[in-house]
Image (cartoon, rainbow, N blue to C red; front, side, top):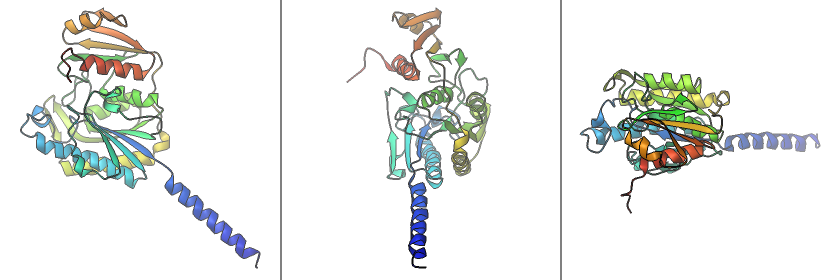
Length: 300
């Protein structure tokens, strides 16, 4: 009996330690947040500081991202990094977030909407996303620039921002597990990336019209889908592109393609399009950021 008691104590300690170790296991979640896919967003009046509804919709965007953040922590996340990736990159209301969240703001960034992601993350989540510029459906459908770009192709395939960003995550071996936005982007993302969880918060009627959930209903749906995605974490695979990666960009005007073709690393493939080949998605991301951000009058 005296020999049995120490053995039982050791077994109890081993089980307790094992359980504690499981609880303490790190689970890092990356969240990239856009705004066009937020519930209620339909026009530029909600999307930038000059719009009469922007201040309210900053709160709604923040609410949707917070719903994802809180759901991730409730589902076991130990660390969350959020990328404010719409417009000027200064939309989210920082004071609303828990102290243990880190937020990437403003531009330029080498990894664009995915700045801060690396191989230490377990999963990526996209909140407030929209469909691509080549998609005939979707509210505010565009890819990176609605004013300047008509198409972005990676290895010959047209991409939404969700595809470009999933490929950046995939470079680091990180799977995308969930997306929120209108019905068009949820469908487009699933066809491209795979059977990820999708929170449809509005249904596109046209480029500037939608049937939408209320902010509260959207936040509830997002939280449910985040938890479901983390619960299925082992089912998801990173979205990886074959390297080197061929990037083709079609502009709505001809002069950008003409000027970019002065660079020896760029080929002009038609009047409106150029091709750049990067060794991986990091090089492609940096080229895209340069292409969209550089002008000779940059200051300071």
